[in-house]
Image (tube, rainbow, N blue to C red; front, top):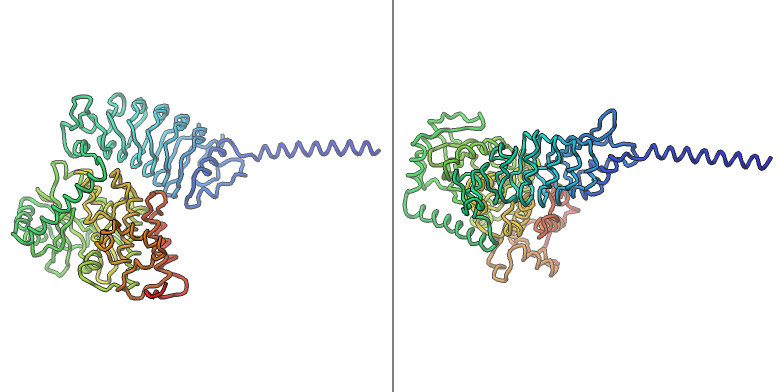
Length: 589
């Protein structure tokens, strides 16, 4: 009897074990799910969306951003845009051989595009733009014979464009603009059909698509056609940081000297401005809330002279324009650069004119004349932050300075994360932060650096009054990213806290800029000494939090800098609402 019971128990145990094994096999994640979990593991940070993916699910079909074929349960689409994904793409994505849509643009993905993507032969659309991918474009992508749309623009890709891409017969949309691609654009196959806009923003590309003669063809690196594209930039690549500084100094000096001569010696500018608007000018307004006829605006423009100048910078001369009804505007005059200037400029201005935000200066419209563009902005009576800190001698208290920093951060975060397309400012500095009547900050001149870079030279984009705002990698490569803006913002924070220019003589003579000075004070455990001694009402916790944020922003490693979205979060959580108020006493430790 006992032997029978033992045999029976063993049989039941064996049956239970088999059932458990079968159950476990049924609950195991599918191979597509395993590939996506590899993707999740490679991502070091995000807004949490992929953290909700459950490894215990039998398939990934209910995961956010994932679409499956209803019958086969195979993954056919991966769409995760604007989710702050940071990390590389793993080679395991190549196992998704039924994937038709790969949509990962507007994130912080980096490293190379995996060659294994060439195994995803069902792919029809790939959108990887606005990330930080480096390395070459994989030639294996030429295996994606069903590919219709490929956008890998606005990354840090290098090397030549693979000729294999020209054999993708179904490709209808193609964009590799704003990278570091070099060499001749393949002219065989479909790539010969795409417009020049598909290739712009690559300093060393050449080919008939962009009307730039390749050096191999003629020994001449300049194009035979328009100077509005790559031809205007080929051969003027930034060779070294010293060359950049020299060029910047020259342009800044020319601008300063031009303004000085203009103010002191004559009415050359006022005469040229009158000629501008009287020679067939037209007015384009972006918002319908201004009750002015074009002829009334032009009539006012003709009266402007040097007495109306309120600023002169790298992007042009700024005038104060007062209308008969009392409304006041700021008018920025930009001289046309070449024959192709109009079409490109007007398209970009339409984008800038559509952007409205509390912490951005509003672009109202522009006057299109034969020789210049006259941009019409809202006038801000508080002038620039540069003037408030360094010229007018105003005593800005702690709350005012904190509000200015937060306003500038929110304006820049909007440009980086909420605009479509996203905008990298490229020239954040105190003279580009304007103040309204309540001393609230508005970011100005956004979009102008990129707009002028595409039409002119690299140096034009960074004619900052001082060089202390520029990130180290920008000085070396000339490549602007959101993280170069973050660095400049960090310098701006230090400038507001200290009341000193980024290259102030008090520390520049010791070999420091403002970032080096901060690092020195930190090493001496004296970081709080950076604060302006004339600033009243400084709160210790808010100061410490701001110094922590600024230190992260000016990290020499771009990957260690936070996004502007994160900066705003930190400002609101740690600076606006510090622990119990403890006012800073400059005499305390």
